[in-house]
Image (cartoon, rainbow, N blue to C red; front, side, top):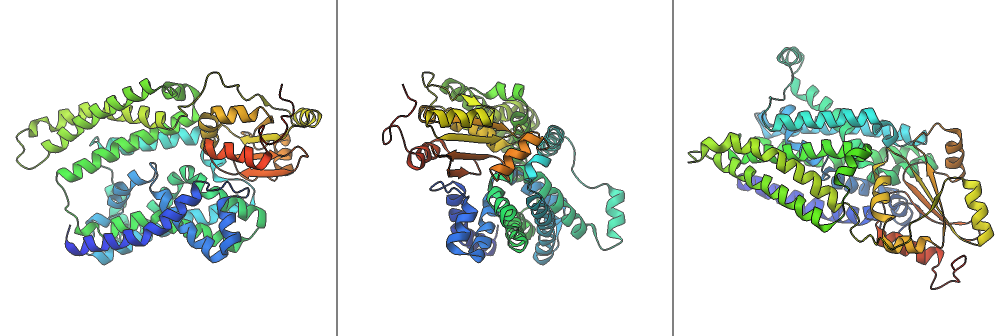
Length: 464
């Protein structure tokens, strides 16, 4: 990597850090806005800042595990690594980013105006299986099972009408947008909600286009400067190995989030399980490092490269699946804390709340909604949340079938346009809190106490 490239990367990093930091703070939920962080930015700073910050949300989304590992793969497929000049590499990368924008902008606006999020269409059972198969195939390619490239016949045909590079880059951008959409849902929820409620298509189009640009920044930088990087060597084998492990983990995550039997394999919050998971991953990493060292020129252990790579795959992937799933669980669950008793009939829940003078907690979720599952596994099991929830009448609405008339009626009544949606009503039935994405336990507990009162600041109605 030459000096000019290093300076350019440092400059890009300095430019993106402020946007990333602000977006991260907004995505984290901050003070628990009842209308979503995008709406809060829009209200406090105006449309221009909201659109600019959408770019920051996109940058953050590009660093998620289901997008970041795709960088070296996609850049190599659409030809940026083989470009003869930096200008051509940048042009190819630009075509790729425009492909992402061409998918996100119209799809996001249409889905918002129809009152449905992309998640319901892209996270059903068959799509989850398809995406898992795709990630496994890409992982296998990274591990050397086969070379991932367009068929030679198609390559030759496209080259006769202007070159496979730009057309392939644009198409790959469309595909990348489709693959990334399910895991960028939490970042898009606020934007989509605003578009659906305000019907402001101009704002929605600009925000989603800006988001797509942010999502594509990392691909653009990698593609634009790929011509300056070494074309092979042990470092590239290391990148392929890490990417392969990441992609295989993503395949597992789609199956884990969709299918209960798969989730049960790693749904163990004990620290013993976490230690075992870390140990298994460490074994895989050590074997992987030996494989990379063996790939160095004139390495005395060159003969160990292939066997070490094969031996490292299973423990590395299994360890990553176990450890990252374990990290995402709530480890402070108190078995003695009372569980939240969820009612499923709205009329009965409201009648009970009215009779006992209690506030109401309403959770709209679905089987396909990954953020909903995070709420179920991290936030609602928290002992503080459980204890505070005893003051509420809890109502859970299963919106998996969004064509069900009863579900549609409830979504219209409570103005629900995306999932997850968690609403808190005070004792008079007035909405006081609304969350449209995953909320950490501490933030949720604070919202329950500060916005709906607590057993320590109000009379404990219904508590015996």
